[in-house]
Length: 91
Image (cartoon, rainbow, N blue to C red):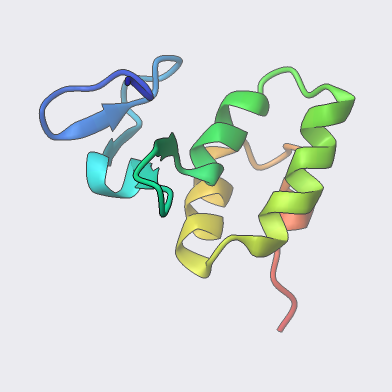
């Protein structure tokens, strides 16, 4: 099963090949052993042309991301992207 493009070491974002994430961080595995793309990277794909269901996904998933994954998505999205407000953590 393939969950994206990459080389032997990294997952590579097909829309911007400068975005490279080690496979061990980009692909997670369910308790049943099924691989899936990390949620922040899936949201990155959905962020280009946001549909209503993508916004719903973002509102549900972003609060559940750990701080590292949240920071990664914040870094990868444009500063003016509508989801940046969801990514801010209040002190």
